[in-house]
Image (cartoon, rainbow, N blue to C red):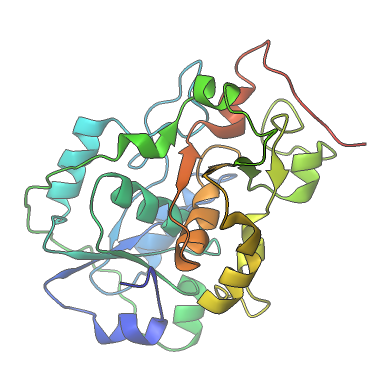
Length: 278
């Protein structure tokens, strides 16, 4: 199953009993905006998952701005939302696919392989005249059985112990170049990046037309990574890094791990080194 699905394909699957649509719209600067827009209109039958209330645990001293959700609570939430191994989940957002990709990764991490994200966002869906509704769907509760891939996630200590000097392991920072360099920091308390990391901006996986690049284009982009033994990806809080992971998977690369706490976790440890670029 390809991880990225076209709007036309999504439209043809509306109302299918084995498909669960999930609206993931979220604005980091205005956390309530996503749910507000969902209430104003969404894809027919779509449920809503909030990045911070549904897809993250509560913020603590360490763990970053969007810690992975509590396992027991998340499994119950999936079941109550009608998601189990028999369903295909299709996620969408209005943030270039970043939030949808985060849900895609989470479900894959929990062992649910039948997950896709919609190419392009809700605004484009509406502009193209596809149907929308305001009705909140009634979900049929089921039982989600997790099979968690715990080795997909690295902690701060794991990242600190990485040896990138030999070139067999690569540490990828998915944030915008100006945040990676330390010239600009609009979200976190400290600027810069983890020493030894290289910058592969996740939005470079998108075309100028606002869509995901083709599998062939992504294979070309990630060609230098194919010989790596281990690829570790991070961003600000473990969300937009998933925009790199899904693109790498589309390019046929599998040996990827996520530093889920990411930069916001790294800087929560006072003595962790920080690198900037002049």
